[in-house]
Amino acid sequence: MSAAVTQAPAPVVQATRPTTLLAADRSSTSSVQSSETLFDTDAKLDHTSHKPWKHFGFHHHHHHDSRNSSKESVAVVEERSASTKRGATFWASFKYLNNLTPKQVDDFMASYVIYNLDWEDEPAMIKALGPNYKQKVGDSLRAYYGVMNHLCALGSVEKMYIPPLMDKHVSVLDNQLLYEESIARDLGLKPGDRVLDIGCGRGRVAAHMAKYSGAQITGINIDPNQLAQAREWNAQQGLSNTFVERDQNDLPLPFADASFDAFYQIQAFSLCKDLPAMFREIYRVLKPGARFSMLDWVSLPAYDPTNPEHDALMRRVKPLIGAVGTPTPAGLEKALTDAGFQVTRSDNASVGGLQAPLIDKVDVYFRAVRQMILGLVRLHVLPKHFKTLINRLCLDGQAFVKMDEMRLISTSYRIIAVKPKEEAASA
Ligand SMILES: C[S@@+](CC[C@H](N)C(=O)[O-])C[C@H]1O[C@@H](n2cnc3c(N)ncnc32)[C@H](O)[C@@H]1O
Image (cartoon, rainbow, N blue to C red; front, side, top):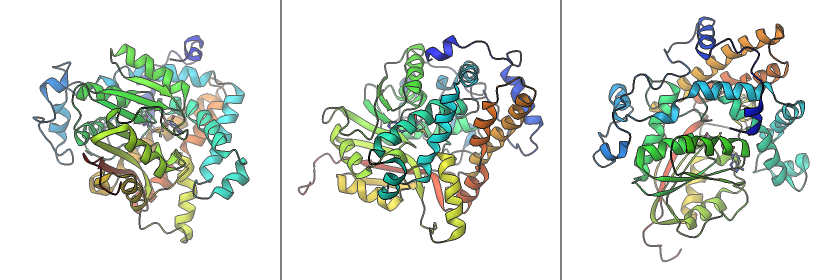
């Protein structure tokens, strides 16, 4: 928790408990279909072991296809405490947001300029941000994520990603956990493995990965605010993950050759300026035979930038999801192969290739929160900047749903690759 959070005065609406808040949201939202609640993941889980990998190692894991079986997939892993204490983190974020300075709010709003740009169009980058644009993008990312991580923590996306739709019968949070567990299996993680996570958020994914597999995660993040929370969470959970403050665009990566047994990242690569160079670096720091997993935003073959409807949707969705680059599956595969990896899987990780049901769930939730916040701002219970923030956050959620349904883009595109045990003669 950052100093600003600990020093923050009590929120003005302290009497309202999070559950009440949620109940209010639900009743005002007719289109909520699921029984998902803000802090709902733990009740239905079976906590019988504190060391899941001892009982459910990957090799004798009840390999379920999470696309088919909700009951089984939820019951298999008992320890999901990476998602506990959501009430506490909700309030910590609420207080943090309540105490933002006008400059923090202005910088956050101004940071959106980068999402109208693209790494591919360097002249436009230089025109908007100057020759030192890499540094400027980094400043914007810090201003953006320093606030965004707290906004996301008001809902079930404290881990700042909408997961692939793994199982339509469970919550967004459970879909995140299921997806993270699938990463651990795809990577073949074992106790003691050293794993690199780029764009590690508040360290919650790393915590779940460590508990699930016994591996030790090193997370990189540009945002010191999230890192402070990651370290605090790690200590509270008694884990030995480590966290490094670093802009992923400052290559080389600060690690020795062959220092990791595996690599994963979730939705941070659109903020990487030079993916081919990044993949070469990841290749370098991985041991031979180590596996690579990424989940990210791509534009799909159906997307046609010359189609005015597609173009207009793209202009709305990029800022909403906070993407700078817009990679394609083919471009990612080529860059990985050029770096020396063998791509073993490249697909949309969502059931049926559609993430829209989860995007819609998150959108419906935040629009309900928005109604409540607007009401409280009108009553002068909350400071005005809440209105600015929540209006920005809720803009264009339905454009995102539409683009996903039209299969123009996806934020649940997965690639698994391996660094060959023996380097090819040409490499
Ligand atoms: C959309 S979130 C992805 C979710 C994240 N993996 C998690 O676990 O919450 C992107 C993450 O990448 C981080 N990030 C963004 N730009 C970065 C950069 N240039 N270098 C390092 N981390 C970055 C953000 O601070 C944030 O934690």
